[in-house]
Image (cartoon, rainbow, N blue to C red; front, top):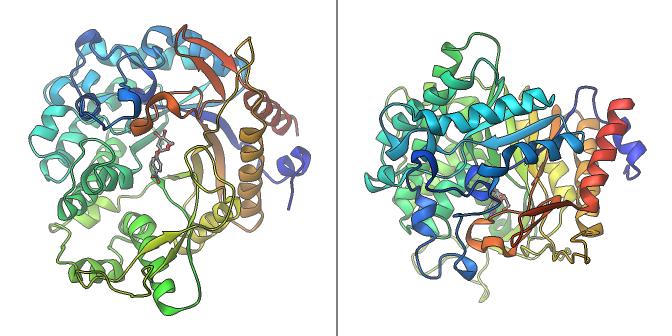
Length: 461
Ligand code: PNW
């Protein structure tokens, strides 16, 4: 295992991207500026009890009004790539109609600012802020939303395609579909299992429609992809129920997305599991051809891995509905402030599993990072040795996967700034730069300096 920065860097390919990521609703604030309309997150934040401390994204990091200074921060860190998301309700208020010039204008200026500073812009088209009116019309469980997404994608693409080469259609469709429509932990806060599976399919369809249309309208070679949150699912033991629980978790978390994207069909075992639960994916003729439109890069977001058992606490292997038990159980690792276990070796295994199951698909780590209980000093400086150690162990995990053959072309840390951590509000801090929410002052943490030095050493290598 390589652990020193020198050894780590030696294993990363030349041209490896170093960067940071954010998303619109988590940092921008300015929710009523320049014609923006509410998204499902504005609505969800008003639901009592939905968000810790009743926090909202109304102000967030006020990035909408501080954008040039935030770009200067990235420049100071010497990072070459910035992945940000475009807010659909700014660009196409209410989710329909022509582009809103003031809304797209913000991203136009952001892209110009990044290019002026020598930073490569990486656009995510959808990081969860669906216009509320589209949710009122049914949201992602409704097929039309996929077509609305492709239309919106082309509005953004037409405005920025002359300057942006790298595009992510969707961020983490698992979170949109499952946390949003099955588990009620994210907007829109629904708890409808079959609808959540319809959302999975329509998200993928929207991705495929946007990908093929962007490709067709492109003046040159682009890098288009999708970003998935994926993990290694460990079985708790060799016993068949545990092995099967891990298979189901991997099926619903990883293969249900990657099989249709890469191979053009849903995994047969997952389809059979769903059929047993009375759920059918709403696949129409031709959908899988669209969904498997070639992508150039897979965005991998990794935070943790989990272990699964097929036994309930009382030892039974089926629940009250007769469905097989699936429970995650502790791996026994240290945890972050999110209560997520720290499992860097699961990252290596994950990357190698993608390399094995979907050979030839280049990957970029589009998010990896951790929340810890930061303790600022009187100057707001945080000596976050825990976050730095997380970066070291996970970058080492990436280097180990590369050494074993995986094609991984970059690493974007989550996140540039402390920000609105969805249902956890501002209580959880993932930033490499501290945000003081009273003053909006930004102070780079020790981990920011660490990443800056690694990137510089790698470039000089
Ligand atoms: C990702 N899970 O969300 C998102 O892309 C970011 O916006 C977010 O801030 C970051 O990770 C940290 O949470 C996730 O429950 C949310 O497995 C939940 C899960 C995974 C990723």
